[in-house]
Length: 112
Length: 120
Image (cartoon, rainbow over all chains, first blue to last red):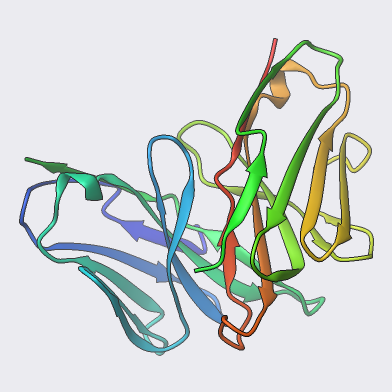
């Protein structure tokens, strides 16, 4: 079982719909990242969370540390939001350094 | 937010040649840089972690003599793929973590745009 699980794997929605992508993890973490990867490959860091909720424009990210769960929401979705959204958790290794472990991503397609 | 650049954005080379990829943090000091590799339709896989001025720490299964990493300054890290072969063709992404007056005190991590390597 992967340490980081995302759902759904693929999501297609109509423009304007409210989008939710979920991420569950099974280990203790120091932070969680939400990343966006467009077809060209470049990765944009959307959020880094260690507790609570963050909002940036139409994007909202929440995390529940006790339940080991995070959600990324997109309001008023737009075709330009079409991308792969990746959840990554920061784990402290036995050697004391922090590494990111990535989910497999959610491919979002917004249809005009 | 902070910016991380990579150069080149894509490279095509012949088998057996060496390729150098540069990663720069443009507006912050990157105390730690990470190099990832991503194959089509797969997630990112960490290759190595480098701290400025010290040797890189490689993940299990990554050959340190084949993937040479140099983190000579707080704004530059390089990855050299030596004697590249077609199986090294992949998307290589660097990421930098550090602190500056504009960043949170928790060491945010930012990603470069990636370099697509094709070895013929």
